[in-house]
Image (cartoon, rainbow, N blue to C red; front, side):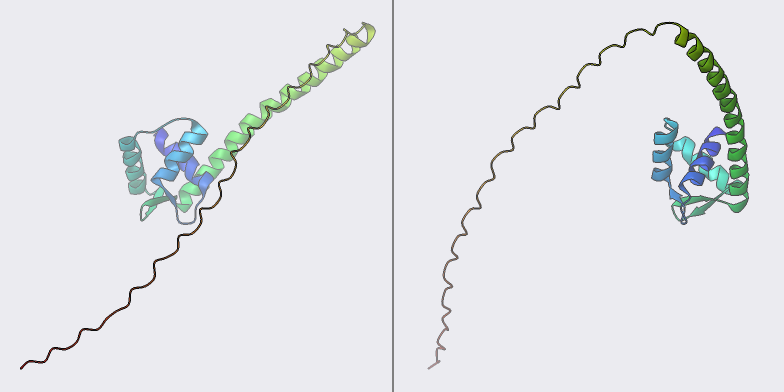
Length: 155
């Protein structure tokens, strides 16, 4: 299931000790993979993964089980090796091509360089409004005197 694979990659990247919450997982997927997984699909995938044992649920957070963590790391390392190899070949061909072009350009006259346009100046800052003076404090009214009632005697 593709959703579980994305969640595994997310949990490996976040690697929280206490696990990652559902909003944290969704936020990572949105920022890194530029996709949104619907709530019901995500809940079903997480529930399925917990039943299989690839994920461990801690309160409202999820964590990779130790076995799943080892498998995911190995898979990611294999992917990185595959992507790194073609890049090295491409860089060697670029060097050879640049050597050829540098030899040919040295025999020919180089084209006159274009004058670079002066950089635009930053927009002037807006003047901030003058600060208001603090309002003077109002004097508090004098305290009222408390009077005691006289006890009326019964006759």
